[in-house]
Amino acid sequence: MATLAVPAATRADLWRTPLIMLGITITALLALFARDAAAMVTIWWTASTFTHCLFILPITLWLVSIRWDQVRLMTPQPGLKGLVMLGAGAGVWLLGSAADFGMLRHTGLVVMLQASVWILLGTQVARGLLFPLFYLVFLIPFGDELVPFFQTITAKICIWLLEVAHVPAKIDGIFITVPNGFYQVAAACSGIKFLVAMLAFGALAAHVCFKSNVRRALFMLAAVIVPVIANGIRAFGTIYIGYLTNTDLAISVDHIIYGWFFFGFVIIVLMLASWPFFDRVRGAPWIDPVPTAPKSRVTPLAALFASLLLMLVPVGWNTAVAANGHIPVPHHIDLPAVPGWTRAPIDNDHPWSPRFDGADHRLLGRYRNAAGQTVDLAIALYGWQGEGRKLVGYGHGAVDPDGPWRWTNDLPAPADAKFERLMGQDKVTRL
Image (cartoon, rainbow, N blue to C red; front, side):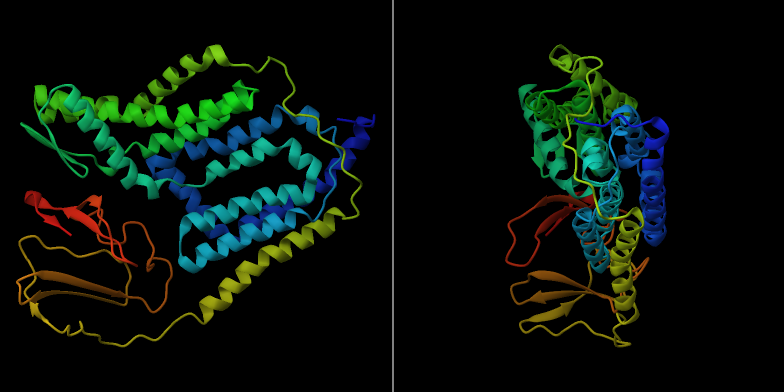
């Protein structure tokens, strides 16, 4: 990396204005999208799956600090190339806002934050800070969408290990039955909270401990596979202890070993196994040679205004749509008459209803045909969406997390539909 010998005082002057403009840009970004920033912090603080996100910003600052002696020798040169990335982040945020999908909004916010550094400090500095900027991705609370998939994997690992241990067991989706017990691989036992935390830890360890990209990739692969297998073994151990003793003892033992103790054990095993393959030399530079960028004609102030204008586009668009987005809904609606079907009484022994908070109208009815088949029809009608009244939201759909029914497995669905099997009290199933 070719750099000119510039006195320290002069170099500090070169950095002062771009850093001030970057601070203003980030402050404006967080102010414009304060609701999403606050929502992310609330999720980090209250959802155990994303507690590790609280450590991402301090780790990122540390990653910047260990390479700062090299970065400060570069010359920050604001440019407009990063506006493409900023626009992409704004577009993602706008899509998330239109669909009221929090993960998309949070992703857009983080991408805009990363792009701001590129725009205000320039391509050369952004390359020097490439990994710290990338690491901000782990601020995004993601992974809940994969819970059913990993519940199924954990259940399959359990049943395979139970067969190896010669324990008579039956599997029904995510439910496992042994002679003296009935177990569910609940969402909390899917292992997703450890997997997403392990991805963040694995990315950091792979960067800090390895120089070879091949070894980094293999370590990341292990960081995905090892916790999934370990979680399956843990769940099997719980059921096996219950089979040998009783369910209450198995659950109490599981509560003792589950949590950060389990996560810490998996980390220790993974690091000890990979220790002999660490290839980063102590004291080696953190930044590969970065080509010197041509002098930019864009001033920090111009980069600041360009960034702010682009950030205001999705906010303005969203405000305009929200102002005209209230669709009048009728004061009263009825369930439809369906040819060949007649209305029937609701099953009060095993009641079911989907969850859609804040809907303007919610209807639920049962139909029966001449063959005696019954179908429950639920309708949720929204005239507009807002905080507390979202079509797409946590727990919305056929299975209310606070209700008596539990998702068992997905079944082959017809076009434009989703087909789920649920299990309720007394092992009653519902399609």
